[in-house]
Length: 73
Image 1 (cartoon, helix red, strand yellow):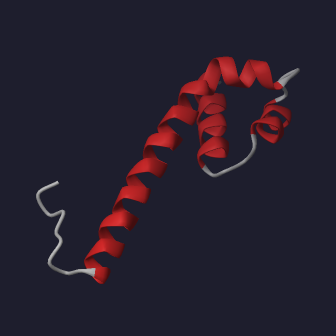
Image 2 (spheres, helix red, strand yellow):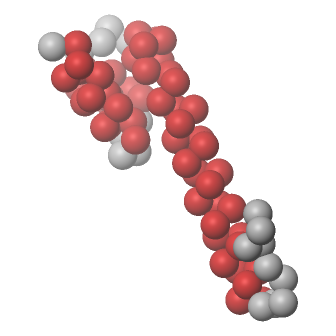
């Protein structure tokens, strides 16, 4: 049962559902419970967002000046 709840919490947070709404769906008294148990997922979302931002910067740089390359990065 815990694995299912963890999967649901992870899916909600990774798909952009707010902490307050996810807490209500999971039946937590407040957001603190969700953040204590699943706060590490916010860290993963931050890393994914940073990677997406870097890919965007590389693509934009290549469009603006094809001689600049981040291929080795």
